[in-house]
Every structure is written in C-alpha cells, then in structure tokens.
Image (cartoon, rainbow over all chains, first blue to last red):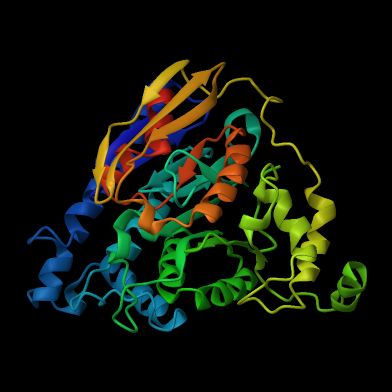
Length: 249
Length: 171
C-alpha cells in the first residue's frame, strides 16, 4: 500500500509491502503520519510554540527539554564533530536541527512500524529513504538515484534490503547550499548520495560532503569503514562510487 | 599494466577508496554500474582518491558485478503500478519550469520524460558531461525502481520528481 503525506515542509511517501489486511496497513500508515506530524509540531523552526523554538528563545532550559530533543542536540553535536564542522545545526546563526530531525524521525517511524508488525516497508521523506526488509516479490528494494541534471532520469539504481539512502544536491536550491566552514556557497559537487544503516547519519553526511566540495570525496571514502557507501557527481559531471555501493545489475 | 597494478595493490586490502570515473569519456551505451569497474583500470584520471590504489577495488569488484544487462524484463510481475501515463505537476524553479511524465505498462515504468526550460539553464550545464551521464542514466532507468532518492526537499521539488510519478502510479 502506498501513502503520500505532506508533513515537515516536505512530502513523505510510505510503501507498506507486508501481507496484512488493508485495514491494518491503513492504520499503520495513519500511525506513522501521526508521529511525523507530532515531530513537526515539536521540532519545526517555523512554529513559535515548538519545543525547538522555545528552547532557542531561552523559554525552555536544556534540562527541561524532552529526551527526544536532548538526543537530537547530542547527535547534532556528534555530527558537527565527525564532519569537521561541515554539518552545522547552527550554520544559520541560531539552532536549526531540521537537517537531523527529518532522518531521525523517519528512523523512529520505521522502528515503530517494525514493532507494530510491518517488516517490509519504506518511508521516503524529501528524497531520503529508509527501507526495511525486502521489496515487492521478496527481492531487494530498487532505489533510483536521481540524475543530477535531469529530474526524470536516474544516475544509478541501487539494490537495498534494510538500509537508508540519502541524497543531497545543489540542483534543487542552486547556489544556496552553504559551506558552513568558509561561509561561502558550496561548490565542486553537484550531488552526493550516502547509503548506510541509519538515515539520519546518511543524510547528515551527504549534506556535509556536499558542503565540503571535492575534498568531500576523500572524506566519504573513509566512511565506508563505518558501513556507509556513497556515490557523488562533480559539477563537471564526473561520477564517483565507493567500491561497496550496492549498484544493481 | 592493468594486471600488474592490480597485483601490486592487491595487498592493500581495506583501503577505503572511492573509484573515480570520468563519465564524459565513456562509450555512450555503457551503464554506470559496469563502467565504474571497467574504466577505473583503464582510465588514468583519478583525482581526490589516490591514483595508484584506486585500481584495486575496481578490479576486485569486477567479478562480482558481471550481470551486464539491467534487470529490465526479467520480473515483469507485480509491482502494483497502474498502467497509464502519469504527469507530475509542472513546477516553477529558479531556472524555469519542469514537468515529469512517466508511462506505466504491465506494472513497470516503461518510459520517463520531462520538459525542460530552454533558457537560463545552460549556464549550469557541462554539455559533454550531461550527455554521457544521460546515456548511463537511460540504461539504469530501464530497470524499474520502487523509490527514487534525490535532493527533493521542498514540496515543489517533490511534485516534479520521479518519486511523485511513482507514487501516483502506486496509489
């Protein structure tokens, strides 16, 4: 069953491939959407009464924040350190953990689906996808990576059973992807895709590598040791893939 | 040369390196997936990844990736996609309007096309690079997919995406 939901400022696609009654699948999709809307209400930087906004205004002390928000803040700090400052939740001057929250909330959603009996599904949010179990017909899920210049074409097709794929690119927002270290627009890479066990990490690393530019290729290569494979395309059309990338065919 | 390089480097196991492939020099019909294994050995141009070591993972990977044709027609069974033509919404970007259309037959995506702006877009494109990426992409695209990963953060970007067209077909 496929469900599409507008939430968190993006569009979430939910595919439930389990052999369960339609009514059960429907309620699983509903519960997933309810969680994502809850995340939006609590973590949106556009909602004045969200926990994130109250915290960054100083209305809420760190020790009074929810366990979820404290976890998000911890992870953002870890990622800032792991990426040499290229993933920066404070890049815009004030706290904006959205770059972590989206992937994290989908991870949690997928975990909750599994606990509720869905062992074969994917949740895609704004082009970042978490897959669990096998896809249609019991084969791996086939995930296309968007061509960095043409919206209707694919640069790669990946075979994935249990795992996450995140893509960051300059093609959507043009020059508005910033290198938080230099304060200049990110240049050098057109598109970065990271594949690994955790969507929030894959997403943050793809964003960080994109901000790094070509040095990001070397940085990405080292992430394979941590279980994250990658593919990247430079501004001048050179394509790079890590040796373990699960390319189909 | 190729073999000896691979042999010399064969002991450097665990070297986590990215393979560099300049797609613009690939023959037009070679899919990216096999091109990356083959050409890494022949293609001397490898930046940012460490020139001599890059050959090793490429050669090592080759035997495992020998299925050359994309699995386009071998499992035409269920994917739950409805037959027909599905148009994404025309979306205004800073560089113009993009609209994606896919065609579905027998539960599979048989073609995908998009209209593109003809003005104001060329400045960001390297024609050679795009041409060769296209060739690989078209090949890859013939393999039906369940989902599409891309930088489509905004709802506007989603509406013009392949994922949106897939969602329409699967709904």
